[in-house]
Image (cartoon, rainbow, N blue to C red; front, top):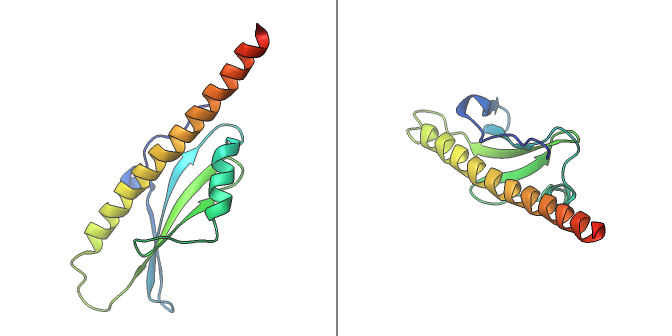
Length: 122
């Protein structure tokens, strides 16, 4: 069975800033495997890749042939932003939830493959 990435740790969350658009970009790896992505996960991400969902502008992005990123745009307001740390923490929690969803999909697909193999074997 392929090994899958664990939870996105705080150190895996990348924070970028675009001053012209006045947005922060948060990204975190939420799924990775040693081989190619399971078909169900690749299809799930490809269908949603050009769409964003709330909170803010959050979306999935394929990371090569064997990874998935969760990306979020946060608006920037000049001055003190007391909730930015909380927004990053909420993004981490969302990343963990998305990771669990994709991990469950990968496990289900792997179990279906094993069941088909066993049924074909005898």
